[in-house]
Length: 150
Image 1 (cartoon, rainbow, N blue to C red):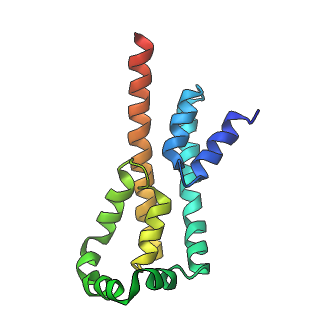
Image 2: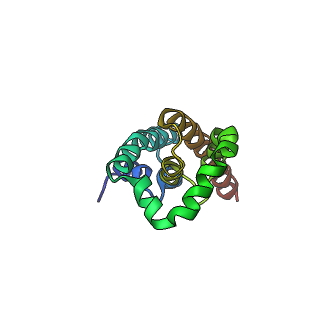
């Protein structure tokens, strides 16, 4: 059987669960709560530069251009100035809300597709990961507290 900590790490690095799924798993396995939170956040943030490197290597922007076509690419460029005003805030809220497909992986795809500054995006996505992890951590602990009392 896989060690529970290794499974937690695997889940935190996975694009399907990220730190949110890892926290749920770790707390359900009765692992030390703050260690679960710390390891899940650390692993999820550590994968962000790797995602950016992979996207740069596969020339993601050119692929997006081929898929969505010239018309949509022109609209993105045309409205980029408007989006730039709120880009960090929009990216932060996108990651911070712990819903499916709103994690670091999808945010990196969005940042790359919109040609956002990678350093700024890394910081904003990292902050969003921390906020989402804290939300899941608090809700999961509250749920465990309520259901263990009954």
